[in-house]
Length: 266
Image (cartoon, rainbow, N blue to C red; front, side):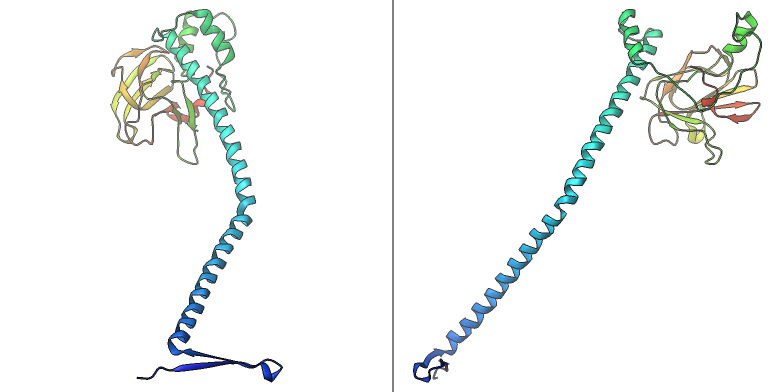
């Protein structure tokens, strides 16, 4: 079987210099394949160049984003510093209840003066009875001790009181196992599990006020006992329906929900 050949003729302006090239069909096919391969290489090269151009275009955005991350990191460092201050305050309270190993009062007072825990609620409820700013009688002191005006644990208020959101108390986020204190003197009317609220303690302060402490890890009191303001009644936990360790703390006055932050004095 004879081979097929192709003749390529190159004719310049001067006809006398015309040239002819004779190639076989196989050579012609190889030439076509070479052109296809060259086209594919060029396409990949163009795509690669386009990717490099996109990276260069996005460089400024990446630089701005990096600057934002640096600023955010500085904010995190400031928050960690504040948490350290709260941790120091917690150790101070533990020392008061003789559960803290550091007993050097001068050292503790120096730390506390530098890291004073100052709670400033948006508004205050006036507690109206005679003698509050003067020397108090025994009865007056007893009445004050029954007002639930002490923050029940050391932590951060992570959710505030809100009628609109039906959150009739505050959430205080704290380390699991931290002590929970009675915010006022009164009689324990409930101490046990309470559905989504988990382990709960309710204290009747016998002056119209009632306080409730929920999601406790464990309870350190019993129904019917009388507790004094500052007594440990349980420990911070996440029992019931919670997303993390905290105390759901609520107060009522004559069965009407109150914002605890308006009652706190220390």
